[in-house]
Length: 302
Image 1 (cartoon, rainbow, N blue to C red):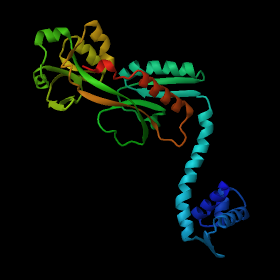
Image 2 (cartoon, rainbow, N blue to C red; image 1 turned 90 degrees about the vertical axis):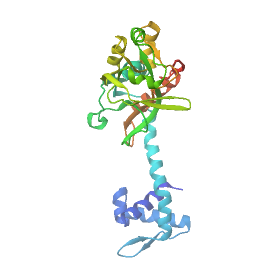
Image 3 (cartoon, rainbow, N blue to C red; image 1 turned 90 degrees about the horizontal axis):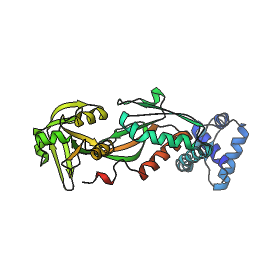
C-alpha cells in the first residue's frame, strides 16, 4: 500500500478537513482528496462523510485510524533514525558518573571509544551528586541503584551489577577479632556510606538486618577505602575497589560468605526521539565491555 495514501488519511482524520490536511502535508487540497478517494477504493470502505461544510470520519475510519496511525508513526521514526545509525559517531560526548566508577570503568571505556571512533571527543565529569542531564547538557550518566529503579524521564539500560562485601584492615581484625555472625557487627566500629544503617546482609536462603554503630561515614568510596586500610573499623566496598588491597594484604574480607547489598549499574541518557549515534555507540561499547569483564566477577564469590 502507498504510504502517501495513509499519510493523507491520517492528516484528514487529525485535522478534520481536506484543506487543513493539505496545509499540514504541504500539498494541494486536490492531492489529499484524490489520495483519500484512492484509499477508499482500495479498501472498499467509506472513510469520511463529506458535506460542503465539514468532513466527519465513519466508524470504519475510526477503526482504521486506531490501527495505522501508531504503526505509521513508529515506521517513520525508524526510517528517520536509519541515516543517523549509519553515520560514524562524531562530535563531543559528555558523560558523568561517580568518582570511583569513573576510575574503575569509564577510563578504559573512553579510551576504547576514542580509539575506535577518531572523530569523537569525550568530556567526563566525576561527581557523587546526581546531575540533571538535560539541564546541564550531558549525553550520558553511569549510575548505581540499589532496589527498584526510580521513576525517571531518562532512558536506562542495565549494564552490570555490583556486589558489596565486608572488609577491614588486618590490624583492626587483630585488635578486635573477626565477627562470626552478622549480628556481631553491631558491636564493631562501622565505616560506610552516609545513611546505610541498618545494613542488610544476604546469602542463599537467608537475609538479616543489623543496626551498625557508624563511626565514620562518607559519600566517597575512595575515602572509605583509605579509612578502612588505616584500621578504623569494618565496612563495605565493591570487589573492584578492594581486590588490589586484598592482594597486597592491606585489607581482608570479613564474613566472606555474606553479601551486603547488590547494586545495579545503569547507563542513562535523556529520552529523545532521535538518540545521537555517538550515544548509542558508547552505550553499546560499554555494555559489551562489562559483559566481557563484569564489575561483579567470579572473585566476588566467597
